[in-house]
Picture: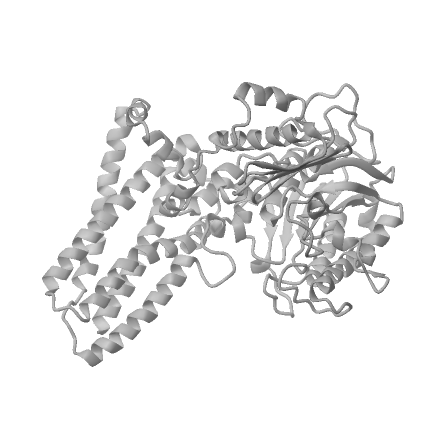
Length: 614
């Protein structure tokens, strides 16, 4: 029985070693790109990459585990079992080697690890072959064969370790229990651990240098994980012909040249910028009172003081954090039924505030008390210009983390200190982002002001934000600081509020800081996607890459409206009315302003066409 268990363990760790060696081969193959990396970074490529290597090793070990279990009970000879294993490992070796050979050749041209994109080209083999140089084909075929031979050779002694003799019923029963335990451990490896985030490419991203992140990525995982994402986005929601859709979008796009510059509301073109993304901060919760007392007294106070810029008619683009973050930081509309953040091969091509400001000499740093591997956030952040990420794995506090990570009090205090230190220790301007998390289910917070558990959690985050703002106000950092407080999405409160209602998506946005020159209340309708153009416009920075983002302070056109999606449709709202459309039922839910329906249709069709082209 011991030999059977040892066989499974050696299979798993041999596979991990083979996957790690492939990373070294990749680094040597692209030595011109890896030459500038330090030894520490090269070690991190292998170290961080082990997380996905464990996942692939878990998949490959699943069949040997099954063979081990069957061999405990079935009277089949060692020779027969080993023949089955030889066939299995030969097949695995050929497939893994093929993926690696194709991946290492295409990276030079594509700039990303192999994914489901290749299947679109293989759907027309004749056309695909015409684009392959025969010398490249011969070279990679030889590389594939050599890799497969090496892998088969490595697995051969592992197969010889297998002992297939049948055991008595008592040892077999104990062996079955041991195998079930190993199956559980194997499942943990496949899942990517016991944390909230499952295995995804973000788990191996550790650097602001894309090549190092790509080198750490397991190409087999990258390919298999993206197969289901290879969706035909271009054919979705064909409301108009491509020509008509493009023509309609011209009047909506946010990056059209303006006859007049936007109204200036900042006193400086290069402020230090803080963007705080508030988890689930809905206007319906912000405006509610319990026994005559506001749930969010600090946000209400900051709004009413009249020293900032309050956006009265501001809306979230979606109902999920991953989609809200992309809308806020990249000016890209949320989608129905999918999330571009979870598609790294597409999200890396998005524009972003971080990348635009990085080109202007800004340092960019994002903070989160939870796990940025969740929904591929780390992959998106690094790929779109955030130079540094600090999250749960990097933090050490005396208080243990809650379900989603370190609570907002710890993070807001830490973040304020980071902002103050950075503003006084460096002459370089900076962009710092923070995503809060305490106002999220299960609403477990170290605070007790309201009896309602959910409202109390929002009150806690509001208290943390109020303390943080006061600390920043009383520091030298405040004079040249712009603080943007904006929610990632709304919340279904009250419970009777329908998921598709505009009010469900209405959220606060408030600008604060010493960099503000003209405090005001902004009545124009806008949404998260408009933040990028509005902020960059104030700084005199071009925002041509942000097709959907409208400068709120620019004279019209384009038309000012808020567009949002929910899981089954879209909504559009402006000063004239609203339109809500149900995609599943292909029906109009509400239409008080007829032209808004076609605006929503244009935005939805254009978004999916854009995704197909990225």
